[in-house]
Picture 1 (cartoon, one colour):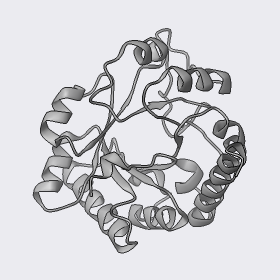
Picture 2 (cartoon, one colour):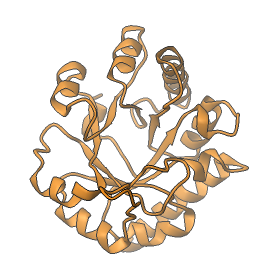
Picture 3 (cartoon, one colour):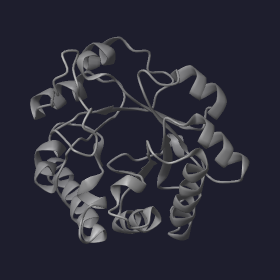
Amino acid sequence: MNIRKNFDISAYLVVGPENTKGRPVATIIKDAVEAGFTCVQIRSKVASAYELIQLTRQASNVIAQAGKSDEVALLVDDRLDVILAARKEGIKVDGIHIGQSDIPVNVCREYLGEDSIVGLSARTHELFEYIRTMDVSQIDYFGAGPLHETLTKPDCGIDLDGKVVTRSFADISKLSKLSPIPIVVGGGVKLVDIPQLAQTGVGGFFIVSAVSDAYNPKSAAAELVNAWRLYKLDLNGK
């Protein structure tokens, strides 16, 4: 099955060892996947390549054990080398998430192939223009935000003058209308934000601390998933 044709970014977990309060990354992923999360991204700025490969292996195994390898996409942030090495070792990795200043999209696509997912975050100050002008033929979704300032990634949303620019729900609605591909929104997203976010037309939300820092990650994940589904159903009149 080509997951690229069917992937779901509605409930998207971003996680690494620095985000779990010392708990195993695999445990957080297991809780989120069992609660209904549809996409997992391994992201760490402190882990070595070897550690990232092992985290990716653990994540892939957790998703497989849940019987969701064809439903839950597994991505790695930035590290094309880690994905290629993991795949060489037989680990199922579905794609990569990159920033505008990271490895070029066409290089990722060349090395990962047409069946892989490539997601991209544009710089905050260029986001609207980027979405208007970018050739999206090689990209599967845009990451946008932050909705709020976040300690998980303090540099998220920094503009040219060094100030953090957050995105209003009106901004997000505009982005959603402009974008030819799905948008997933994150950056400090909490349960209370889900009703308004669901109304903007985006494809989903991405979460770090709202799940990985939670006292009960599985319960927190389930609340987020259920809220998103509920408000989407209400909007669709079903």
